[in-house]
Each structure stands twice: as C-alpha cells, then as structure tokens.
Amino acid sequence: MKNIFKVISVLLCMVILTNGSNLVAQNKRTGTSAATQLLIPVGGRDFALGGSSIATTSGVEAMYWNPAGLTKMKDGAQGMFSDMTYIADIGVKYAAVGGTFGDFGSIGVSMKSLDFGKVANTTEDDPENTGARYYEPDFSTFSLTYSKSLSDAVTVGFTGKIISEKILDASSTGWAADMGVQYANLVGISGLDLGIVIKNIGPQMQYSGSGMYRKAQVTTGARPEQTYTIEAQEFELPTTIDLGLAYNVDLGPAKLSLSGTYTNNSMYVDEFRYGGELAFTVTSDIELYGRFGIADAQTKSDPVTGEDDTDIFKPAMGGGVKYRTEGMTIMVDYAVRNTEYLGSNNVLSVKLGF
Image 1: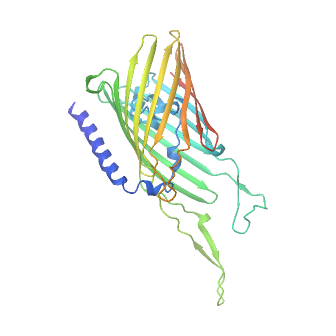
Image 2: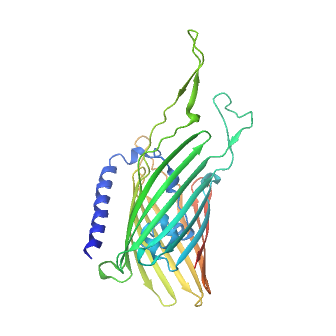
Image 3: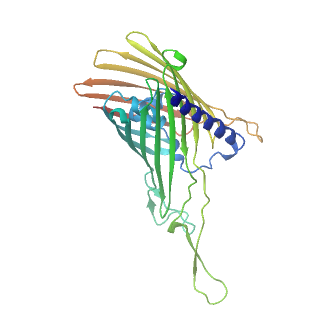
C-alpha cells in the first residue's frame, strides 16, 4: 500500500510542477508546438465522451487516453481498428493490439497515421503549381505501452512513442512518453474512480533533410553557385496533464457512468471535459451504449478586439454495441462531433476481444 501512495504522490508532484511552469506562457504559445498529431483523439467510445473518461477508459483504446487502463481489458487479448474523418478531410487511422500476461502485466502496441491526400507542390518559382506536381505528407506515431495492476484498486501505465513526420524531402523524428494511473473506489466510495495522466513528455523536434537546402548565386567574383542549409526552429511537444473523476451507478439492467476531466495544455488554453455513458443489457450476449461529451475550452477575450476566442469543436455524441460469441467479443462504436467551420468529425471503431 505504501508503494501505491508513493506512485500517486510522485505523479501529483509532477502535475503541480509542470502546471506551474506552463501557466505564464500558455496562451502565448498557441499553435507553436511540434507534433500536434499527438493531440488528435482516437477510438469511438472515448471520443464520444469528449475525452472525459481518463478515469475509466480501458483496453487497447486506453493506450491513447490513459495507459493505466490497458490492463483493465476484460479479455486476454484485444485488437482494435479506428478510422476518423478529421478536419479538412484529413483521415486518421489507428490500429492497436494488446494482451495480458498474468502477474507480469499487460503490453500493447499501436500505430496512428494521418492521410492528407495529395497536396499541390507549390514553390517560390511556381506558386500556382502550373507543373501539376503533388506530394503526400507522411505523419505517423508508433507506441508501446506497459500497464500493471498494483492492487485491486490501483493500476499504472507507461507509454513510449516514436513520432515521425515527413513533408517532401524534409522530415522530423522524435520521441515522447506518457504516464498514467487509475484508482478505483476512491476513498472507499464504491463507483468513484480517479484518473491522472501526463502525456507527450519529450525533447523538442526539428525538421532537417535535403528539403532544407537552398541555392545561392554569387553576384561577385568567379565562384560557382553555392548551396546552403536553412536551419529549422526547434519546437516543444504539446504536453498535457489530465485529472479526471468518474462515478458509476448500477441501475439494474442499465449502468450509468458520469465523468469529468480537467486538462492543462502546455501549448493551448485549459479545458474542462464532461461526459456520460448509459449501458443497457439487452441479453446476456448483447449490450447497447449511448454516449455524449462536451469540451469546454477556457478561451479568453482578444486584448485588441475584445471578442472572445472561438473553440471550433462542438459537443460529441455516439453509441455502440457489444456482442459476445463463443470465444470472442465484438465491440462496434461510432461517434460524431461537429466543428465551427470545417464540417464534422466522424469516428468508427471496431474492437475484438479473445
């Protein structure tokens, strides 16, 4: 039990220290982080809950939201595929597999990739792309997660990530880490759960490669054309800290879960997230789910115009169905979230348990 409280104390200290260092410059650094792909959510269930469920997320979907939840999978092994239509017609694909290995704990791997489609290759010499040249950016993240139960109430998890971004002949590679904990039946209250997760801790990223080369024509003397390299600026990763609570109520054939999360963003304004899930048992083999989620970004007024900043993301909602067959569990989830200017985000995920 002492080790459990040591883990929680260390995480809370990290929360306080990191939170304090980010408060001053937080709003001034919006849009300046590297690897913003790390912030794009995945999975139909937790997406529909607005990202509020870090205290209850479980299975392979939890590897993104809170790695401590991986070991709470109800199957010996799980696999999941998720497909999202993001803003500006960007496609986000996510695949994950994980398994439990007795007292050792649980291990999972995941891959997230972005599909931008073909982008016109405009240059300084050809800003209208009259040559009809196109390229496809390659953004992906590979993750390895380890999670373990320390007691009946406490689970912890750690994730290591390799981040890769490539645009034409310029690329950047980095790494990041997540650490999370979940505590069930907090302070002895049945159904009250706590979640804490620190995400995207890692060094700065910087673009390099032959795409950064430029040619300089010497205007004096007899020297030939010279080549020089543009040194790209280094940027910090978008570190976030989530503190979440959830309360679960058993209503007989139905179960209700209400959750809330406070998110501190190092590169954006803070957010409060709220969500609810109603699970209804139809038969012993079939369960239906309805979900909603709201993210309340703490935007501030523009000091010049006096107008409030706009949070483009609207409330999310969705549902799912779980079907148990002999030796397999099939879970299908769908979620949708409207945006202010760029249509809606649609997520469909399929999870298989063995």
